[in-house]
Amino acid sequence: MERYICENVFVPLRSGPSHKSEMLSQVLFGEKYNIIEKSGCWIKIRTLFDNYTGWIDTDHLQHTADEEHSEGSVLNKSLLCCRNDQTRLVLEAGCEIYNPDFENKVFMIGKNRYTTCNDFSSSYISTTDSLTDTAMKFINSPYIWGGRIPSGIDCSGFCQLVYKIHGIAIPRDSGVQAEAGKNISFINETEPGDLVFFDNERGRITHVGMILSQGLVIHSSGRVRIDSIDHQGIFKQEIGGYSHKLRTIKRIV
Image 1 (cartoon, one colour):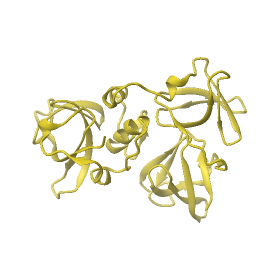
Image 2 (spheres, rainbow, N blue to C red; image 1 turned 120 degrees about the horizontal axis):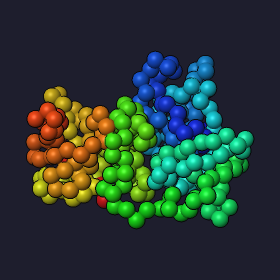
Image 3 (cartoon, one colour; image 1 turned 45 degrees about the vertical axis):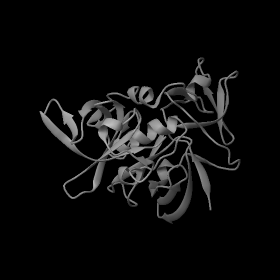
Image 4 (cartoon, rainbow, N blue to C red; image 1 turned 90 degrees about the vertical axis):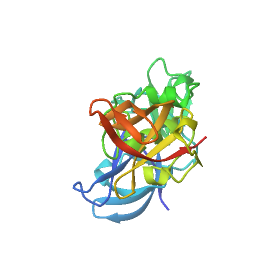
């Protein structure tokens, strides 16, 4: 099966072979995928990181064959770099790079060499921050359905991004994320970094956030924001009431 490494900042991953189809998710720079089907100018792929399937337009095909099967290093902040043709590219947190050479300020994607900014160092791919410290870096990032990068991110994409930066892979969608980890019975037993899930009137999990501290949750709802949380759910001051009903709590690590 053909395997490639994405060389776009991101590629929209759609529910069907059309630009009118819903954007389910995104493939980020440096992430790998298999091609499993082709239909005209569209291809259906499966991502290796979160085993997600969807369609991408072949016009977005800036990629290289994955011949070395090496592991990528996840960026924890944006990185300015230049392609071989000297055009500029800004990679966002969550993107992956390979074979970083901090002395010569370069990294590789397959056989393609990227030059970086002068401050390129291991600080771009390693962190001593806590999960919640990392989450706070993306405060006010705008909400975009299907988004997985700080310039536009949905609720489950936000939690997935934070955990990815810390070397932990969790599923893409909130309903599947809720099946991972250890159950926490009561809201007053939560710890920073725990995930909290919320359901709709039909009992379907539709939202996820991360415990910041006792009584506070950080989540992507309109933007990445901090709100109060209790045993009922998320309380938003500006509406004077609850916006999301608590369903379950999970500890991933």
